[in-house]
Amino acid sequence: MIEIEKNLIISGQVNGSFISEQSVFLKTKNNEIIILVGCAHPSLEKFIMKAQKITGIRAVIGGFHGFKKLSYLKDIDFIGACHCSKYYNLIKETFPRQYKRICLGDNYIF
Image 1: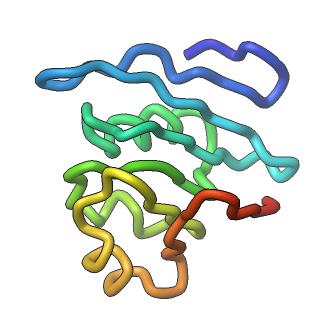
Image 2: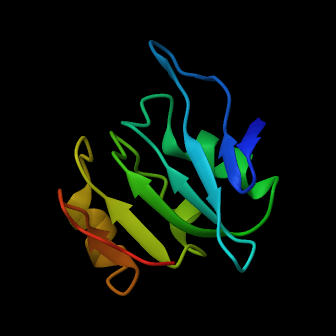
C-alpha cells in the first residue's frame, strides 16, 4: 500500500486468477476507510482485507463482479454496488439499510 497524499492510499497490486487490479482507499475525517474498486476481478474480499489492516471500513463502492461472500460486508455502513456486480439483488436483500445502487452522477458525502 502507498499513501500518495494525506488520506489517499493506493492498495497496490492485488492479484487474481486471471487479472490484477488496484483500488483506492480514502480516509474520512473520522479515520474510516472508503474503498473504491474498479471491477474487483481479483475478489472484493482481498481489497476489504487490505483496507482492514489500516482501520475500520465505512464504505465500499464500485463493481463487485462475482463477489458473493457477503459476510465480509456485514460491518460496512455503505455498500455501493455499481457496474460489473452480478449479485445486486442478493446484496440488497441481505443488507437493505446499507445497500445503495450507485449510478453515474450520484453524490455522497462521508
